[in-house]
Length: 91
Image (cartoon, rainbow, N blue to C red; front, side):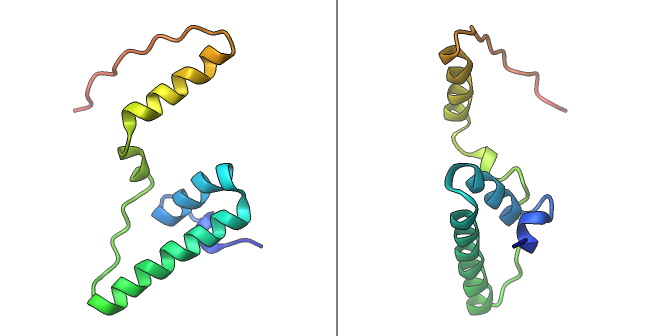
């Protein structure tokens, strides 16, 4: 079964689905996205507000240092030394 939110690119719920599908499986990812949609719809209806899509990079803003360490440890477990340098800030 294909879901609309999982196939459209660049939206918060599609990103959430693809991120969770890897770790939890398709069915649990669908249920988590459905729960997030339900919560969003609840607040939209209750508070009479518009939905603001935060984009696909929203989840990457959190725990960046932890994510970097996770990606460094994966190749090191395979016996590869990794050296990371910070990229220059984009203008």
